[in-house]
Length: 420
RNA sequence: GGAGGCUUCGCCUAGUCUGGUCUAUGGCGCCGCACUGCUAAUGCGGUUUGGGUCUUAAAGCCCAUCCCGGGUUCGAAUCCCGGAGCCUCCGCCA
Image (cartoon, rainbow, N blue to C red; front, side):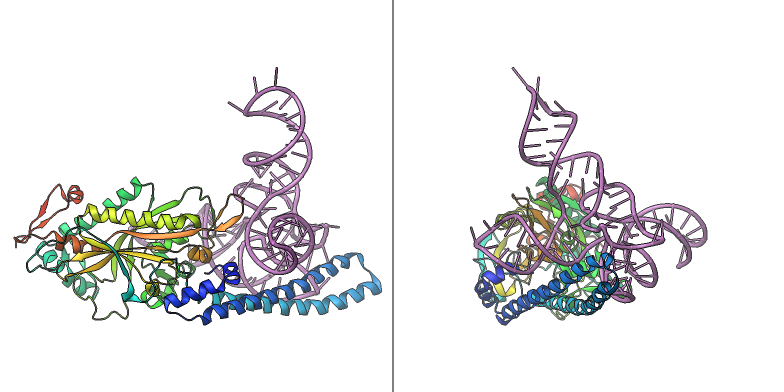
């Protein structure tokens, strides 16, 4: 949700942001109109209500003809107040809808344009020189690590089993991520993955992404697509102490319907309905958000370095940001079998957009309540197994284990294909 | 699944039966001031949150807010209906 004060004072800033996103400026003007409509309606209701209360106070003291006259007037007022009140709450609701229609103001510096207009900030690590690289599924099946066939048998397409070293690799990877997060002062969290509609709504996932989300109709609950949802809703409606950033690292399974991506990335575990993830989430003062975003990105890169995979960092273009983000950086790992980079992390600065929706505040130096800024970033996911397996494959069919993961695989530095 | 109880401005709490003087009581905590030559005691004042209006800004004034949503009434913390959360007991399943 956009700050209405900012909107009134500087609507052109928002119009420019909409242009950079390739979206309509008309929603900004609709919001301006809804805002002034609401204030008008509220003022009318409050004036009537004040009179009603004033007269109500005289009632117990009045008697006889005076009382009858009062009664006549207040009865009339009562009706008007009711009407004005429902007009005001209708205007309120209209304002809320208009506000939900406007995406976050982009951060200065975010590249304008659409999906393909990202800017590559840097490439890190040497791409391995592998002749005829096998893809992660071929490798994973040989190692007895990934079983797509049985996943499909039991649950359908885009489901899989991790088995043997696949299971150990994932648990190790996530544990490594959790260890790093704790080391930097994050509070480790295992959140609920089923959430109420308002939690889903508050994080902005029921807008354009609604068809991506699993819903349990019988219980009116949603399966989260990322622990960002329960981590953001965690402090909803609260006033936090943000003298220091509050940082949480959530470990959870994530569920995505992948509606509309039929036929895309169908092989292996690149695009699946269920996976696991460690996600960083920060609550900070707005003036801290930009720096915190850089820190989250640095922590993501530190993890990528630990698993020794080459990657690049991209500055995602405005039109590809999603409604909550003001700026977004993705890390894309090199995938030898595809000969290209694929997204493995994503960190967004949501500024106060999410905080306003979820009513998350803090006290500033003057003791006034202000809306908190929120940020999130990926520290590890199931998808990371792809670049790990592919970049570390050896000509003999074995896979080298990055040093940082070796303790989680019984100290092994190489994974050998399973004997059959 | 069944029965009952509870939910008040950070925490605890009065008020709900018997609707208006609730502009919500008191304690704790916190903040400020005063006093005392000493991290104490005492006194005084302040201390929910959101919105509107005015203003350079602040103050002021006004409205809402007693778990949430409806209803009754001239008027609801208080009465009625629906819902949520917590607790206790019973049943059932682990």
